Amino acid sequence: MSLLARLAARIYRLMLACYSAGFRAEFGAEMQMVFSTAMREVQRSGKDKFWKLVWREFRCWPGSVIQEHLQARRNKMAVQDQFTPIRPAELLAALIIFLIPTIATLLVMIVGVGNMNEIPKWLDIILVIFFLGSLIAAFGFAIIRGLPRWSPPYLGFLIVSLLLLGPFWPLQQLWEWAYPHIYRALGQTSTWSMLKRVLYQGGQNAILWSFVLLIAVILITLLRLLPYTRSLWWRVREDWTQLSFLVYGGIVLNILLIFNEYRQDELWSLASWIFLAIGCLLYLHSQEKYQRILILLCGATLAMWIVAVGKWVLVPIQVWGPYFESHPPETERWFEFYRTMAEWICIVIALLAPALLTLLPTSPPQNVQEEIGSV
Image 1 (cartoon, one colour):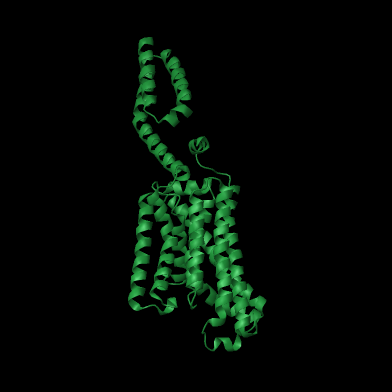
Image 2 (cartoon, helix red, strand yellow):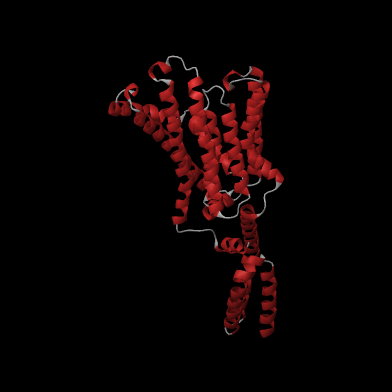
């Protein structure tokens, strides 16, 4: 009987060797001790219990080994996404969302058109196809890669697009429902003071970015259910700035819509997107959380301040027809400046809000934490 026990113990050590290195380091000694204790107990109980113990261990072993190797692979992918240097192809894919509007604006300026709203039809079609095609290609690459750490801005861009440009324009519908109540409370818009107008626009922006965060959290939680994209959830839980990075991507479309009715806005749009792209680049090369969130805040701040100054400069040269009869250009330039500042404050709050995730009690699995701590 002792010979069989020694043979079983050696076979059990070989079985343990088939597990991943991380699993063996964490549980190997404990499992070996439990098995040895069980073997000593069954030696006194007869061969029937001995063979039942051996069968139990061998029966569960193949599935356990496969499961632990798959889990180790997912954990390794999550850790690599978080800490390994980003590859050139991935860096290019990360920057496409910021570079495409910049390239489109440069093309318009090279053609010599003074206003994005007056570009030739053929150039408009080419730019739309180029923009959408590049975004779809980059987003597809991100999905294939399992939504790595450079991909959240694409989710942010998608969420803002659905909120503002979707088939039902949900935020527009919300404001259409709320407007009569606001009208009764504050009176006709033509009688509003500058402060009321700015607060009204600030409220719209606050709702927009609140919805962006809410939908982002729901979406990432749903992606947690899929093994292929589950690492995104753990990255967000380990590094809350990933959610801020998602919000950062939505600013790209927001700036495009801000200047939608403006003429001669190309230089201001170009400068704002360039600063956003620089912020993305620096974010992906930063290791500390405080550095990453500071970079996102700086990139968003510079971009929005450029938009605010651009509006202050551009409003007097706009041709908005009868609108200026009740809203003098000098008043409107300050209103547009202040409302952009209000939106900047909403964006800053949205970028910082994901820090509240640190208050949640749960955290990534222990083996993920140990691997992260060892890097």
